[in-house]
Image (cartoon, rainbow, N blue to C red; front, side):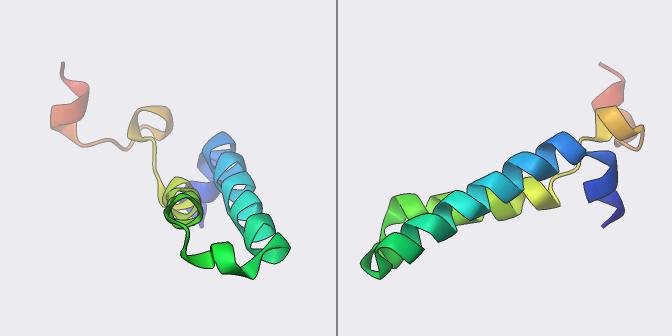
Length: 66
């Protein structure tokens, strides 16, 4: 959860993607198997879990030496 606090913009967009996917499923439950909805939910979860190392200062050394 510390990553979510440090990368609040990424987390907000992840939450929005999850909400949009959930709303599509709520409107029409048959869309739960739609690849677009699955990608939206997976992308939202990925954004929440993402960590921008260059923003938080904890990137791997090889990523910051370029």
